[in-house]
Length: 160
Image (tube, rainbow, N blue to C red):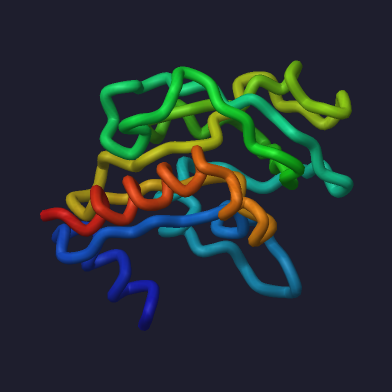
């Protein structure tokens, strides 16, 4: 019932949505089937792997005109986060706002997916929506770039 209400609200544009990190942990977990709607909403991805011991990475803005990245440089650092990888890039099904440069990981990591979007929106819905792949730890709120992203996202997603 909650899923149907969320889908309807996104289709009608009566709400906005800002999603973080765990929202893309899509697959069959703990005996629960994956939601076909949310799978599509998130770009038809399935969680594949992650960097369990965390890494710092450089995020590169792809759509500098998007309101969510207003006031941010073309590249910024997200420190010590748990980067997820998926079975495929969501790029064909969403609008990518930014990606992570996997070669920038400190320390270097072998868990990579190539084309690695980390901020995206799904323009197939009237409801404004944005997803941030990073966001595992509360310490991220000490990062000025993230605070700007978060505030921009709230303002943008709440507009009609």
